[in-house]
Amino acid sequence: MPFYYRFFIACTIACTIVVISGCATNIPKQSAATSAALALWQQQKLNNSTMSSWEIKGKIGVKTGDQGGSATLKWSYRNDRQEIELYGPFGGGRIKISVTGDAAILKDTKGAVIEGESAAQVLYQRLGWRVPFAELIMWCRGLPDDHATDIVIDQYGRLKSLNQGVWHIEYQEYRSVAGFTLPRKLTLASLPGGMALYDDHGKYIGDQLRVKVILRRWSAINPPGNRNYLP
Image 1 (cartoon, one colour):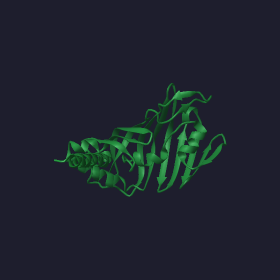
Image 2: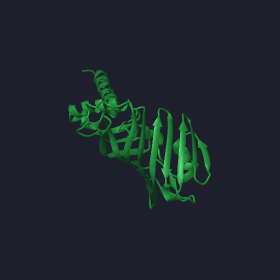
Image 3: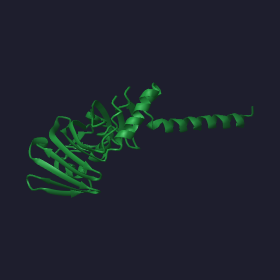
Image 4: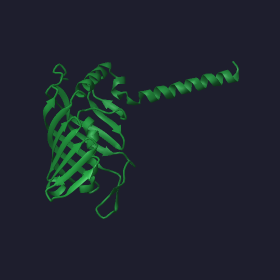
């Protein structure tokens, strides 16, 4: 067989492997082991993606190095409108963030008013902590978005972990609410080199940030879920 022909075949095979590998990026790893888990995953994604509104009560904690804090969380979501309340955030007080489209306003009990483009932005300006609320709209429903990679699901077709942007997300616990299977506990950890963190004095303190979210109570979910799906 002529050399140029063998070379053409080798290049074709190599390119095919690259394409297949790229297409497999968003395929859950667990699905390779069990088609049943993949079927449950597809059903849960379809069901949970129908949620257009909800209310959540829980807790949120943030930690980097030896610094951190926690707050009680109350989060109301209606399409693109949000009301996020943090009670006792990282030392005291109450913070309320209102989000409509691409505009966010933060107000606290000390009279501070901060305006920005997102809840994450105004919260960072007020407290210095990064909490990706825009991404949590998907993650709190146990859903990745189109840019997620390294997706892992369990035998029930529920998310176990994924990577998205600078974050690695792990799910520790689920519960059934109003016909939906929804996360109760999840942890967000910054990927190495994904962000640079500084203390209040501008000193670099590393790139490791952990955000723990506990969703204790779901309510006002619309529309009601598929009650036939209860893994």
